[in-house]
Image (cartoon, rainbow, N blue to C red):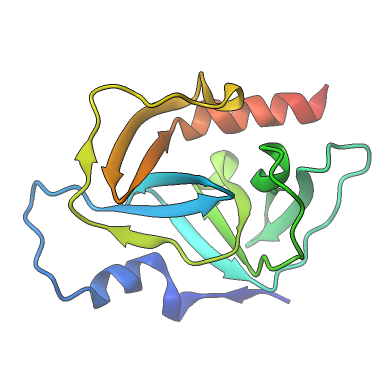
Length: 165
């Protein structure tokens, strides 16, 4: 059974933010995967869903959880904690973050809601990266934590290629 978080969608979270934003201020959301922190532009098409049936695909890596049917479209679902080899944790993933639309849509598990990030400082030099990220980070920011901006299309295309091998 589908349970789309329409009342808690990112657009609604953004509209509930009472702080005025300047036209040139880039709003970004952040989420964590293990000890890694990622950021994405608030204008990217995305959706949070929960309590969704994931249909496993046989003979795929453990980080490829399967597919979901979202409004008639099949979307691959990944567990990025498994991909990045973080220690197994009890299954506390209640959310799926779907990024992109149509054929370019992908989903992955999150433990917590993304957070609106303000006052990010763009870093001029990328921090040291784990090998699995070296070719996929296009920017980094600091606001408390180091927030990495992932080249989503390149990264998830690579994951898809690994699943198909």
